[in-house]
Image (cartoon, rainbow, N blue to C red):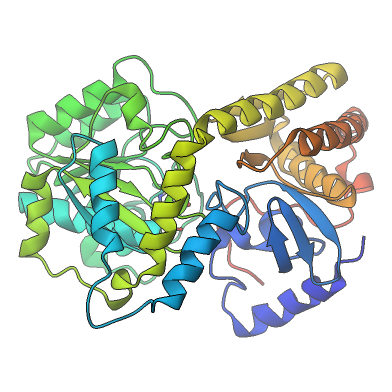
Length: 439
Ligand SMILES: Cc1ncc(COP(=O)(O)O)c(C=O)c1O
């Protein structure tokens, strides 16, 4: 497989774009350094063409989780084209944002008010600002990954490994004011005592408790309820980051399935099928605090985002998309599990079925094995990594073809493990695992 045009373009990009791309998760180094096609010319459904005319089936993170309905969904694109034809930016506001706000509150009856932004990290920053404005406090207790903004990376001012257990290791706090030290303090998922340590052992109660309700593991019985009670007891605003977890298992935030409501929930990627859109929904006593802070941006008012979100949400609801994602995720997990068993490979599977993650358990060799998986799957026509994000357009044919390829590749992985020889099979360097400065 020759992907040289994309590989060469990425070399040029690294000279002129610091970090090579605008999103860490799209760096080729995270998949297959020196071999990953890097750029696409066209994508449709789950089919992706690179710059050399190679065609792949995307069985990886499918637009970093942003395209639940598949690339270039015709219904969403039609709504966007209509929005374009009627003018996307105006001195007046677009009515779609009111319609969208009402729809989100209908789906989440605990919420009364909505604000919009366009990116997930950006919307999380707005949520934290509102929580600080509502409580008059500074400190934030958090768990998990929430974007690139100062409030979050401040956690690493205290100890530069603070964020390591929180999804993306190695995030450096360079450029974050030192005065923010001790304003963001991590706790661990499913460990109530780690939250207690933050909220009880300090005079200053937190402004907010911020977390994804579910990501790599399910909440243990009573954990989300305990976090809710802790927020109530300490007067903190509970913020659920549903940027990735929302709209996968059910229509709306996954918290609806657990019966624990936050004070603010934040949605982004999943709600608008590849068009920039983010929403914060919340109960009015907290959300009203947005009026006491200045939170305002020109492009939060354009029409494409709300039009895309309305079309995406309506389609997800009318086609019962989450049920399909769940079933597809379960099929992929079975393929991984059956083949790991067949070839005696030690592997673990994490996450909810629509956001499944496979990890090989071979200590120092694990990352080389993940890289080898990506390399061999690419040679067989798949964009594949240790994560599989299900979409509404992954069909039986894709799954069957993927199964056949996984079977062949797991055999190679088993041979590699038995011979302790990743270097023999790998044609390039091992993929990065997290944030690293690029050479
Ligand atoms: C849970 C969570 N929060 C926040 C973000 C940041 O969203 P964005 O990349 O749109 O800024 C992400 C992105 O991966 C996410 O998964």
